[in-house]
Image (cartoon, rainbow, N blue to C red; front, side, top):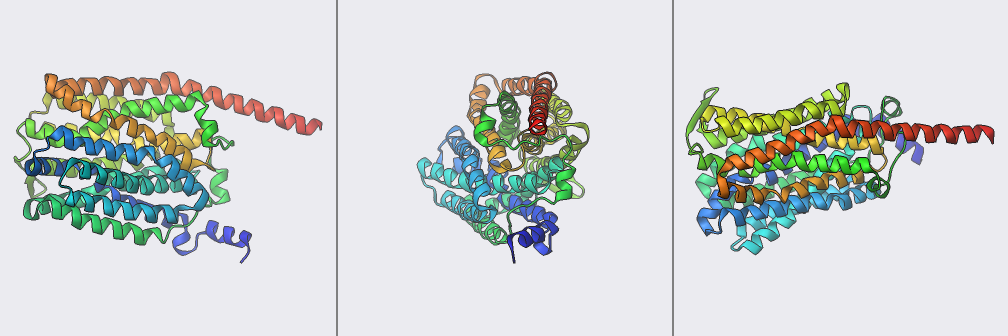
Length: 435
C-alpha cells in the first residue's frame, strides 16, 4: 500500500484506527494513570503512621512527581511528534507501574522520591501523548476532544478510589501500591499497542474555525508574549487546585471530618472517601463540559467564568468547610471549576500555535502544572502559620486574578496576534500575485 493510500485509510478510520476509537483508547489510558496523582492523598497518612517521616516530607514526593510529570512532557511531546504515540505510551506504561512498585518497597525518603520520579515520567508520557493526539485528531472540536481525554485522568480515579481505600485498610498501603502498580502498568502497555499516528480528516481541518493557519514550532512559540501570559495564568489557576488535591486529606483530618460516616444514595462511607469520589467525578465531568462550552462561547469567556468560580469556591470552603456537608459541596465545586484547565489550555494553545507541533507545544505549556506544584508544600507552611484559612485566601486571590486576566489581557493580545498573522499572510499573497 502506498503512503497516500495509508494516509487515506487512517483518515477514513477503519476499525480501531478511527479517530473516535483512538480518542476512546486515549481516554482509557488516562484513566489507568489517574491514580498516580488523584489517589496519592489516601496514602499520605498511612505512610506517615508507618514511618513517621512527617507529612511535609511525604508531600515533597507529590511535588517531585508533578514536576517530573510536567517538565519532561515537552521532550515526550517532541518524541510523539517525531515517532508517533505508540512507543512513548508503552514506555510510560512501564514507568507508571514501576513507580508504584518502588513506592511499595520504599523504606526511606530518598527511595520514595525515586519512585516519584519514575511515576512522573510514566504519567507524563501517557498524559502528554493522549492530549496531543486528541488535539491533532480533532482540530474541529479541540475543546471537547481534549476535555474528554483529560476527563479520563480526572474521573479515572473515581472508579478505583474506594477499592484503593479499602485495600489500604485491609492489606496495608504497601500491598496496595504494588497491586495497583501492576494493574495500571500492564493495562496501559496493552492499550499502547493500539495507538496510531494522528492524521486529521480534511473535513475536520476545514471546520477548524478561528484557529490559526500557521504552525509554530515550540521554539517559535516560546518567543511569543501570548504564550507567557497563558503560562502564568495556568500556574496561577493550577496552584489552587493542586493544593486542594494534595491537601484535602490533611484538611479533612484537621477539621475532624475525615472519618465521619456519610450516606449518599444508600452507600455509607467515611467522609473523606466519599468526598474524593465525588470530587473525581466532578473533576472528570467538567473537562469535556467546559471544553465543549469553550468551543461554543470562546476559550477566554469560559476561563473568565470558571476561574472566578474556583476562587469563590475556595473562599466557601474556608468559610463553611467545618460543616461536613458544606465541606463535601465546596470541595466538589473546587474540582468542578479547576479540572477544566486541562482541556481549555491545551485547546487554546493549539488554536493559537497550530496543530502540527501540538503535542510538543501543549506539553511545554503543561509544564506550568509542574511550576504550580512547587507551591504545594507552601500550603503546609502557610497552614502552620495561621491555619488553612490563609491558604484558601491566597489561592482564591490568584485564581480570581487569572479569571480577570483572561478577558482583560489574554483576549486582546490574541486578537492582535491574529490580526498581524492575517496582515502578513495577505502581504505574502499580494507578492505572489504581483510576481
